[in-house]
Image (tube, rainbow, N blue to C red; front, side, top):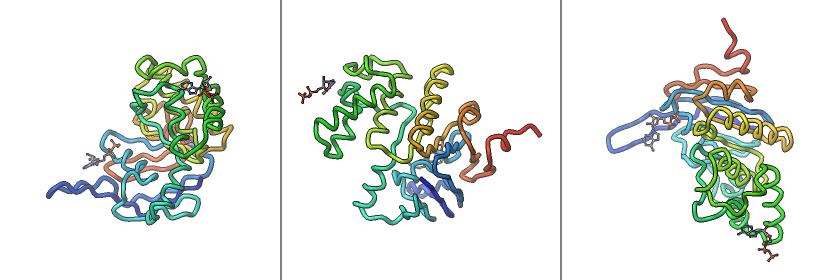
Length: 233
Ligand code: ADP
Ligand code: ADP
C-alpha cells in the first residue's frame, strides 16, 4: 500500500492544556517497503502510527492509502480500509481468556467467516509463525516471542496489505527481537506487504528498514534510506 501523509498535525486538548503531538508531518511510504519511525519517548511516534489507521483523529492534514483519502471516510468505508491494515503492539494485546487458536480466529469471526474457512486460515497461520504445537495454550503460558508471533498471525488473519507495528519488539530480548524481525522480513517478501514500524531501538531500524524517519517533538527532522541517515559523517 502506498501511504501519503500531508501536513498532518495532531493536538491533544485536555481541559486548558494543549499538547502539539504532531506538527505538519509530510511523508510518503512506498508499497512493499519497511518504513521505520524512530524517536525518543513522547516524540509523537505512536500518535503518527495511530493516525494511519484512524485510531487517532488528526487535527489537521490528510492521509491517503492507495489514493483513498482516509481522513474523511464514513463508517463503512473506514471499516473496509481498516480490514486491510493489521497492527501489532508492544504488549501484544492478546485476549487472555482465549487460547492461541482462538486469538488468531477472532478477527476472522468478526469478519463473519464460516468455521471451515476459519479453521483453514488459522492452521495455515499457525504453521507460518511456527506455533502449531501451541494452539491450545493460553497467552499466560507463552514466552514474549511466542505471544508476539500469535499477535502477528492475528494481524495477518484477514490478509492485510499494510502491517503497523507499535514498538512490536521493545518488550523482547535481543535474540527474540532478531527472530521477530526475521519473521517480519519474511512476511514482507512473501506477501509484498507494506510495513510501518515505530521503535526507539536503533538496531531494529538498521536490521530491516528500507527507509527511516527520525521524529523529534512532533516533527520529522530526517527522512532517508537507513544507509544515508545512519552514515558516519
Ligand atoms: P511516542 O509514541 O513517541 O512516545 P506519543 O505519540 O505517545 O509519543 O506522544 C506524543 C505526545 O503527545 C506526548 O507529549 C504525549 O504526552 C502526548 N499524548 C499522547 N497521547 C495523548 C493523549 N491521549 N492526551 C494527551 N496527550 C497525549
Ligand atoms: P469441526 O467440528 O467443524 O470439524 P472443530 O471445531 O472440531 O471443527 O475444529 C477442527 C479443528 O480446528 C480442530 O482439530 C482444531 O485443530 C481446530 N480448532 C477449532 N476450534 C479450536 C479452538 N477453540 N482451539 C483450538 N483449536 C481449535
